[in-house]
Image 1: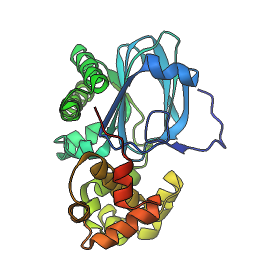
Image 2: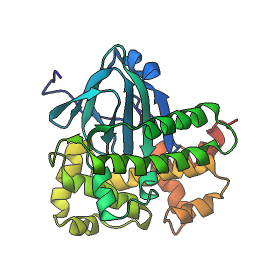
Image 3: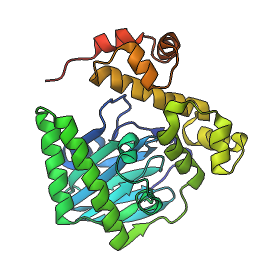
Image 4: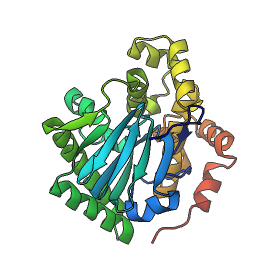
Length: 288
């Protein structure tokens, strides 16, 4: 896969789009998405999203970090948060892209070290019929947006975590080994587990066994953010999602997000978005 050594690595929150999406799961077909990008998607990463590409027909190539890996249907590409990747699809490629908030990963039962290690390892593995059937069901729920669709889709995605981990455990899997930065991915996991505690950067660094300065160099190289900005953006993402999809009061949301003073939360939110929490909530379109 051709590379440009000076190309900027883009941080996406969705497959090929830079936007704020409060839902936990996004699903679409390759047939709908890939042609819009000339069947190529340049080098990018998802700082707080886990992504699967299920290829059920055709072929392609995925670049993961510095390695090019072939894709031949049926296969699944596992892309954990923070991993640099790019895609090129053949004209006959068909399948699904399932993108999940890393918050859902923490709900997946992946707290056991063995399962977490398996799912945080990027690579290409076989795509079994039950995984294909589940992806089709996720797409159906996502597209129809029936009552309780978000709840059903989240449960289906949790089931997919187990199936993917099982497939990677049983192999064969084409992976990139340890090229992806372990400290950066572990920091992302720690942020997911503790973002509401507003821990100091030094505490995260101690948990990683590195200095706060070293952690700052890693995060700035990854997405141009300081560790503090990384954590704040995670809090902001949760704030937007909760404002959009719950009827909790602003004070209750502030407490849930770890703010002892609702006014402090409102100032934090306005500085980041230019709107108050109430203004943001009033601007969210109602769903179905």
